[in-house]
Length: 470
Image (cartoon, rainbow, N blue to C red):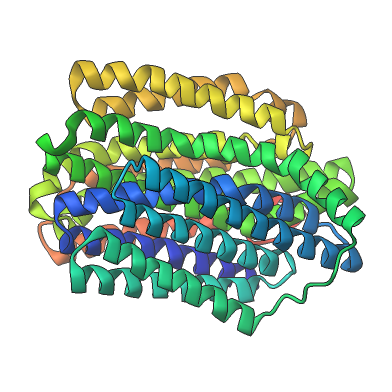
């Protein structure tokens, strides 16, 4: 039940983010929403840049650490986080003040939001790997609720991107305070040699792995800049519809994969460090089953229900642009999440962080090489996203070697069933929901397919038990 609650917490966070996108799309003007979207994406990129290396190092080192080592590692992690936060505020503040890509006041709020998000994510990560999945899920639910309330209140009262971002900043700070009050982390003094040794270990693995994450995150941000800079204010409805599709479709895949890793990845690390080779392969294969099947069904669900969701929630001026780009955006993020997360499992376990950076850099360069001329020739965001899908698929084929050599194979019968289920659900996009009854019927049918695949996959059981009858 704890694993199920952990998944519910992350799914709730994803649903809250989707709701927030729709709400802000209606409250803010198209230009204000585009500014909000660009600032938020840049803030998240900065947060990853400065704090992701600590998150990755924390999960990799803390998941299999003994009690005394874990206490020391936690203290070292938070010390490094403080140093990263100070560096981000100083360097980022100078950049925003001297050569701001956006308004200075909005950029400063984005910097503060990046720091708050990094600190909160690190706190929640430590709770999670300390075998308190339920507590971490509760904190995620609390933060998501506060984020929706804060951003909506700011946008409603002032109607600006800055106000919405300030609401999100207040929610992050409140969540961090609540997390520390409910589940305080007792830090201890670490000797300088031990601190430097820990930081060296974090940096050797974490910084390179985080660099790969930054490069991967830069791919959709770069696509956004290519499209927005080309269209600019000349086509605000197209720009806003494209931005909403990018925002909406990124969150579900990222959060779903993060949720699966939250539940399963600590066990994978533990089996790799302390179990046999067969146990390690079984744990990785179980993780592959979960990720592949869940993302396939999500892809089908997004394609199948986005037309209905668009009609209900997307403002009319940007609806056409949203519907034109949403399916392509879903396909791109499906491929992107598997390159970033699924194929990276084996390199993360072996701490082959340099390979992660090379793969991410190849994706970024290849996608840009396709996106820039495509946008210049066609002027259509849909074709840009289609080109990004092809470029990412090429990198996936070239980067699959470590996972193939690792020897962990998913259950191909279950994967085939997931493909069939996803195709069936995706076909709902061609069936208009003429009434609420028709929409409910499609939801019930999709739910039944998901429940059947979940029952067959037995994803929340131990790795050995879930595969024993397959």
